[in-house]
Image (cartoon, helix red, strand yellow):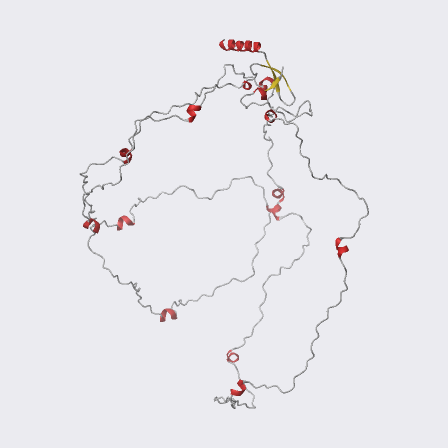
Length: 465
């Protein structure tokens, strides 16, 4: 009996065996021959593949000594190269005779006698005498030199004198600091409570005091125009309603097969490989680590420091500056506010220059606008007359013959029975599972006709029960 694979049992072309890329327990050298290509490809005999004419990449070793001659060396003929003779320059021979240096400028130009320019300004005469000049400037004459005495320095002597006593090692902070208890500081921040005033609130604003109400004129309202309906009746007949009259005919009959749902009476097997092979392992909850409870110390905290304990305060006088105070020289006379600017300057009355505007060419109207345009004033309403259409009547051509609704699909379509692919079942009906190979193919053996009838009857009884 021939064995069949799922790939061969399938009739719809959608079911294939799960081909594994590698084998788990064995690696045979045979390839998988159960493919769609091997099933449908016809084998041809007496045909050999074409032979490649490409030379084989064989490495030829050294078969002899290498000759260093090339085609350039063999074909090149050396010639004797001589220097190219240069062109000899002719010897310079001066021409006999004199050169005529005359030009048209020298011939046409008339030479004039030019005398130097004599200035009309008389010469400056310097009168010098042999006596010595005795002059005294105004600075030497007005300046009187005062006798200046050197000012004594009143700066104290700040030079360093080393002390004679032994170094104590105590700081002023250690001597002067007195340990005191912790006391809260007094807050000098002003209170944030609002201060209420005893005077009544004056809610009168400058707008209420200065505002003067003015009477407003009544607004001009335009009278609405009455609606005037048209005397002609409404023509609601469209070209589609006028031209389209409809054609007598029957609805086309559908030859589409009945979309019945393909179902199976076999109960659904809900068992999977995961549910059969899954082993439930016991899982323990993670242990939580308890945090240590804080315990406050029972002993009293010593807030004293080395600076607070060892500091000794000394009574030291503040440093007195020897620098004299700057005393401003004040005068008892009244301050004169008058200046030459205030005395000589006289303010003039200045008026702002008016803006220079171009005179308007058109005079603006002073009356009230009536909002009446020339179109409203000169328009004369006329009765509307519908235009007559000169288009030819587009009446459809009617016929009493029924419409032929038949198509090639409806005449040539042959309904076929929809069959269920046997490979869609977990165990194909009429086949018995034998074994599976390492490539993932599942092979089934076809049952005889008697056994298939018994199996079909048993499945029918199971479905009825």
